[in-house]
Image (cartoon, rainbow, N blue to C red; front, side):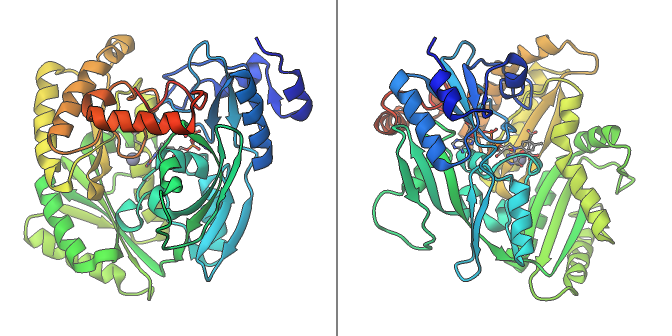
Length: 467
Ligand code: FAD
Ligand code: 2HG
Ligand code: ZN
């Protein structure tokens, strides 16, 4: 075991080694993985990160970067028995600059997403990345997983929002790639390589993120639809008419709605008559505070006449819109409360969503008639969280033992429809082995060569992402 003394001298008060101090860093939000580490180091600056990485590289110690530890795929949890340290970015939480003309915000990687949204708002701008974990997840984690969330339809994922990046390489060198350019054809895009790399290529220490104008008004509705086919017909009509004014098109099943309401007595059922599916539709207007609600109302009236929807509740107040969003964003937590979960974070082309759902529902229902379907997601992006919970009172371990065969049945269908087995959560240690089944040997080999080139010692977050 290497001596941590010289590291402890440099990081006095910022190096945790006691079991009780390290415990929260050694497991994950889903409570699915447990790992071990020699220490947790909490640097304050990119230079600090570089010295930790050099210290580890010289001793052959692996590094597991961690932001808010809200990831869904176990990427931030070290492997059991690992000869590794956890490098927590949490103290690196400065907003560095905001520039109106360049329309960017430059931040430390450990900045909490909500802090970045707030800083943009204080400057009269809008930072559109938005997800349920925004109160704890960090920009570094968002970029490392190429996070999506509920604004992707209009504004794109973390990758689309990032213009530049600062990275500490696996050799402990600081690369300043904090460019603010909209255009750059000067060679391989290293920034793009680090986005979605889940800590396996280097440590993201800072980023330049795009800003947008703040919408003057939003109109939000919870809509009951008879079928997914009808939902997609509505999606096509609304997007074709309103284009970028359509800022969210989320969906959830009746199972999801009742699950959330069971756990959130503060929330009310917005539509009394139960329906198989609900949509959360949001329109935004940049110009005026008036009008957008009328547009939504007339669109929904037409959809009702065409039998595309059966009922709708349009939010009358900002508080009511917030409650609709709380239902949608509350599913992950509510599902966690009823036991272990088997999750999928799949995406298929939007047009294939109905076919995927009917094939997968039939295949799972036939083999596992007792599992509870918890299906929801970012319908406008074709990204479905095709999740399962154990039957009421069912054995948790027996349920979890079915994870691998269930994943395979679902993912085989996904890939047959031209989809991906991870749209926004990353592979981590949950899907890194499985990916070998779905990517071609050439793609896996190219990924391995990238890893070998950037991290020849294999010390950056080992056991994650690659098979
Ligand atoms: P962590 O969990 O700490 O780390 C995630 C991965 O990134 C790990 O592999 C880690 O090693 C790596 N990493 C972290 N920081 C760095 C860094 N600075 N440099 C290099 N690598 C790093 N995701 C979505 O995309 N859309 C959603 O709608 C969404 N909703 C969620 C809702 C809830 C309630 C929860 C708990 C999670 C949700 N997520 C969602 C999962 C999502 O991946 C994370 O919330 C977020 O993007 C991860 O950020 P983090 O700082 O917590 O990263
Ligand atoms: C969401 O969209 C998150 O709410 C979490 O990505 C998904 O719990 C999940 O599987
Ligand atoms: Zn999601």
